Length: 182
Image (cartoon, rainbow, N blue to C red; front, side):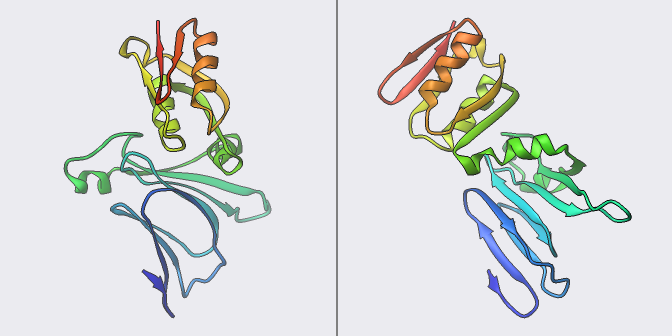
């Protein structure tokens, strides 16, 4: 890893990072995340390591008359899925365009927030685990219920109380964990 005359290479060990890359076709910028490499020659993008899967959101200019940015998303595997065979994860890379509103939600972490759009309580609990030592435990019977909203990333108890209120559930706040149940 490092910067040389032919490449700029960094490794993301955990978490999420936003990169604003100066355009240079002769020195691509490469982010190694788990067993995936994201390569850019000039763009703004994020790379994230949730549950062993690398994701990126990138912005690039459009070709032709429009100068509006075009956003794409690449994701290795399904969210939260772990692979016993790492080669399966490498083969599962998909790229698709995403609307600006989704990019904004994906970047809410920069402002200490987590944005959910029809996310399951189970996935929301996993996302909060990235930001807080206080664990959210979701009863299996309600784990598939979904939530939409913008929440403070450092307040899992506040999230649990809000989700419980909206979904007619119960939130029990303890010292080390928060439980969401019927």
